[in-house]
Length: 186
Ligand SMILES: [Fe+2]
Ligand SMILES: [Fe+2]
Image (cartoon, rainbow, N blue to C red; front, side, top):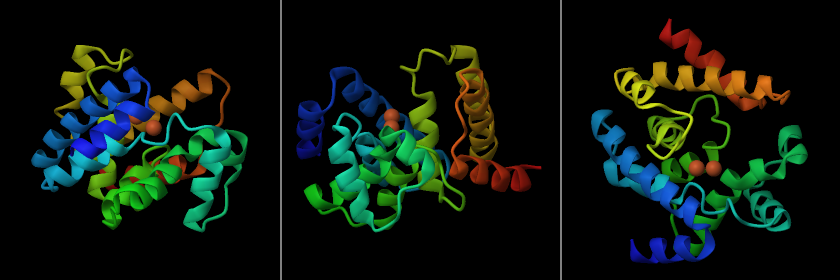
C-alpha cells in the first residue's frame, strides 16, 4: 500500500491525493455493505484518479494502449480519458491484473452499461465522498439510505442536470448506464 500512496502523493495535487484517500475510505464501507471485497474497493478507489493530473499527450498515449478507439466525447475532452489511462497505468506500474479493479478505474469517469458492483461503488464513492462541496450532509444521509442502483441513478440524473445547465453534452456510456439502471430500479 505504501508504494501506491507514495506514487499518488508524488503525482497528484494535494487536493486530489486527499480526495483519493477519502474516496477509498468510503468505497471500503460501501463494499462492506454491498457484499463486495472491501480491499479491492479500497484499492480501486484509491487509484481511480491516478492519471488525472497527467498531460493530455500522455493521457492519449496511455488510454490508446487499451486497444479501443477513442470516442467523440474523449476526442473533444481528452481529460475524460483519465479513467482508461489510469487502468493501463496501474497494470503497468503495479502489475494489477484484477479485471474488476481495472474496470472500476476505467469506468469511473462516465460510468458504463453492464458495469459490476465494484465499478458502481467506486463511481458512487468518487461522487459523494465527504470532501465534495456540492453535497450537503442532508443529501449524504439521504443517499446512504438508498440502494446502490437507486443512488447511482440519482447521481447520474444530477450530473446530467449539471452538464445541461452548463451547456455540456452527456457522454453516451453515462446515458446507456442510466437507461439500464432505470429498467432495474423501477
Ligand atoms: Fe476521475
Ligand atoms: Fe475522483
